[in-house]
Length: 298
Image (cartoon, rainbow, N blue to C red; front, side, top):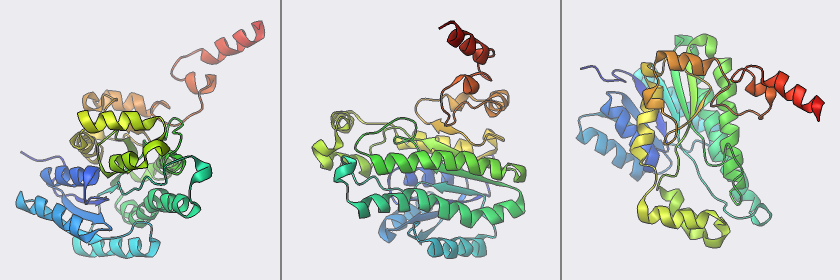
């Protein structure tokens, strides 16, 4: 039986642990050749070994995604070794600084944006020329984390993740004519190293501390669920779906068929928008007229 990603080449950043490792393992299970990227050599070597132990195909590339030149060199190396890049998953990220903005260290705030946002930009810019040349490709960006609602005490992280969601939508439109699909994933509350950082922050985490303590005891979103969603978006199963922010634990993406994907693609559903009648009208015909009529009556 042919697997979903048979014969494809995928780059997964931040794949030394947590969600990134889960995605790399799932991609390999689906017969992709996986390039495992992280700043920590020992961690990505372990991920590669886990894949090889199951007869999968993988290679490790130590890399700081915030280093634009290093990313370009690494991507060219992958192209030289494999001849193509079919899938990119931008998962690498950091959460600190945690606490009110007025107490944040400027250098830490800047570093957060460099890794989360600039890292995503660097990797997208490096792989897109090849994907455009082949008129084929799938890019999955990790968003969530305050992208769609205020997240007090996590200003850098939430700002970066919101920017990634809008970057995803914008790039999706830029490359649509080349048959490249770009989507963002909101993973939900997964118990990764970021949970440990949040707990260590204590009261600086504000209202999120109580939820983090509970999640440590009872578990969060399984990273394997996020990996399944990434596989769906990386495969032909997601069709031409592009420019969307999809929540792994809350959206019923596993049930989407071709007709559902076509409907989603024709509306602003699952995108960042200001809530107003002009946004709602395609989803609720007559919303503009009803809103204007209501305003006149008032």
